[in-house]
Length: 182
Image (cartoon, rainbow, N blue to C red):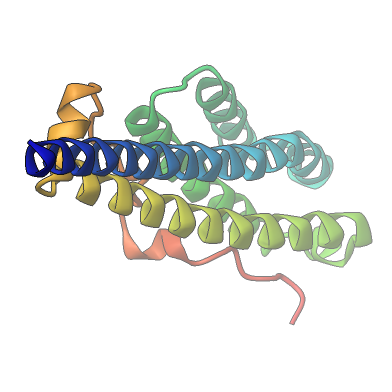
């Protein structure tokens, strides 16, 4: 009887420990996504300033500026990680196009406010990259725990589902925009 009681207690302790690890890993994933979201919002707030700065010098480049503004709006409207990842990839490409566009305008390249905005963008892109890396690591840990025996028993009992990685579409998107002034 005491052996059976010890087995039941051991199983109960294992269940509590497994559940608490799942909760910890889920909360790390949520916290990591929150970090990404903060950096993305910083970038979204910077976009109108960049567009306004470029617009002063490159009025005929409307399509790039319009596309960038539309992508910003669409990205702000979604919470789905897959959709947000795709839109973020497009947005990053458009931001690189905007920076490349500035190369054609010497007055813009010399504008101190634009240079400061560009430096802010580079800093934000670096922070997004770090936050993505942390988030994907947290997702990897959670997904491994959800799929690993015996933790998967507790995960399934409490309806834990694997999370989606925040992926980049191409290797070029891992690079932050390069500074105009060299």
